[in-house]
Length: 152
Length: 152
DNA sequence: TCTATATAGATGCAATTGCATTAACCTGGA
DNA sequence: TCCAGGTTAATGCAATTGCATCTATATAGA
Image 1 (cartoon, rainbow over the protein chains, first blue to last red):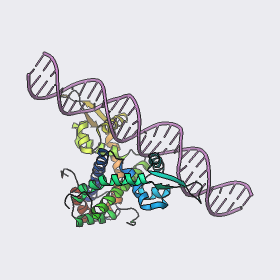
Image 2 (cartoon, helix red, strand yellow):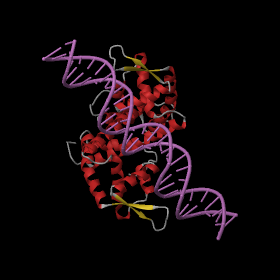
Image 3 (cartoon, each protein chain N blue to C red):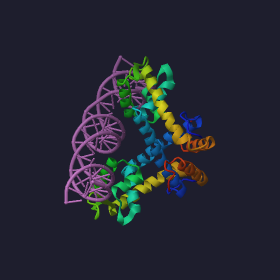
Image 4 (cartoon, rainbow over the protein chains, first blue to last red):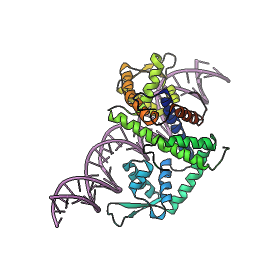
């Protein structure tokens, strides 16, 4: 468990599983959304953050911090969301460079409809496979892999 | 733990962690490779499978099964690998449509150099964070999330 | 005040991905 | 033998991503 240049067989196996399973789960969820005629997961992530932020909205750089998307990615994603009327861009009083992104009613509705599909995927793909205790164990173990062993 | 349309809080948390952590880990590993002037992870996956397959090589559709890449993705990835001289495409005796992909000496060398960086990432990002027992537990839990609760 | 540097966000361009379709070949049954 | 349907792999085109850069504004210090 000390710093090694060569990973242990256990580490390799855990890594490989993590890679495969996470890719598979993402694909499954993405597929379910597509089949429901809904936007991709990335949109959900952003709409979710904005919905939680409420009327105050969020600055793009805050979304970057929260979602792990690259700056240019957020910039373009927001442009698409705005084009679809799911978010609106407001000028910021004390910073002429910036903007505040706020979710619209349509955006909230879209998020809700996405959740009805996405949530079901989570329930089926994960909730139905492990007990609450096992899920807790899993979360705890994954939590130890975060870079800044941060919050949440 | 039964089939639910609405996921439990435990399921949601485990899912969220899995998404965030796996994305973070992939990015870290990808970044390490890039910093080492090496090709992306996807190339490693394919080179690894081909190296394991040995002289007999693999058909593209076998790579698809093993790696979870989409068909068109493999097709183009192999074209790039071939252009770089890392693999070679051989006609198949009893199937005129197909080809066998075989890793070249240069391909093996590239794979080795990638592993020296990738393996270190795995050791640091995962191996150094959890004990062997914890890694085993993690693998076991992840294993239960695979769609066909298949092998390895 | 003026300048240098930092930060927020957008964008041109190349590479990659996704989707749908296509071309080539195989297989089984009439 | 011939044809219908399936399988293997490639590809045209649109959308997205990645990279580097750019514009605009803010901030700190001379």
